[in-house]
Image (cartoon, rainbow over all chains, first blue to last red):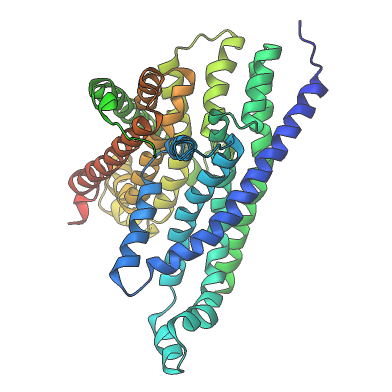
Length: 216
Length: 222
């Protein structure tokens, strides 16, 4: 005997989906900004920033997202600052995203022929200008497809934030499954929600990759 | 003024953490073997376009790769019993890992198979190799050799992803961590050590897979 009609369930899930979408956007934009910084450090000529960036990337790529979430959630609380699940989720996912994007973009920058650096250096551009006006515009083209592809991982990563109590799509689904005793249907709909977000992204990543190869 | 870190209450529970870590490694090992096995079947079916299985695997790959592992796990653990299939938490964890890795490795291995030059197949036919010999020595092993680094990374991603299996009470490493911190209230210290343990396991699995790759997979190229 459930008081939820099918449409109640769908409406609640759609509300959860909005939070999933909001978190994904925050993490992706924040992760992009920090990722750019980490990437610049990663390709630096001096050893210290390069090693710091490499350790940062390896730390995030070599540990579970769930543990990163817990560490942010409990770690910030230790400093005496009250942190909501939403803030913890946003911070942890942003850091997670930045590490992966930095590594993806580093690959793209590395794939630009070295002569481009030398040529722009001979035009008296400083290293930052070389990166900004010569390397990045070319690397951007290569970076679009894998970046869009990685956005799928970000959207899927938001599901883990349900564990620290952030009420996004998966958490909403869990509560509805408990209330309605229809886990098969509810989790099926939850999966459908993620699929609706991720599949278009996957398709466009593949399309961009093909187009790039065709014209390159 | 600030918080006093105290790792002792966590270190005292090292045996619990290690037991959890061992179970995570066991889950990963079983998941990897069957997941890659499923991936090989899927990759062959997709690369050679064997209908209707190629289409079925195509849908399977897209469904799995575009939904979170956690939701797949919940769907299996909570959803299947309502269809009358009883499943324990570790069975659900392994099933979810196999299904998840199967989808990714299908695509990874397929790329390897499609990168085998046609001339290789013709050459093996000219040498009167049987179909099985051709498949094993000319198609599968070289294909796996080409994509081994990507496959290794995916296995590690699945190992790290298995941390969420604690949510259905599979008694792996993150479950042990939850248990310990619920007793000693040293959440940060517990999760910090657990994270370190995961990092070591990831590095260890990477080394092991590199060794397996050198020893058994790309041996033919030397």
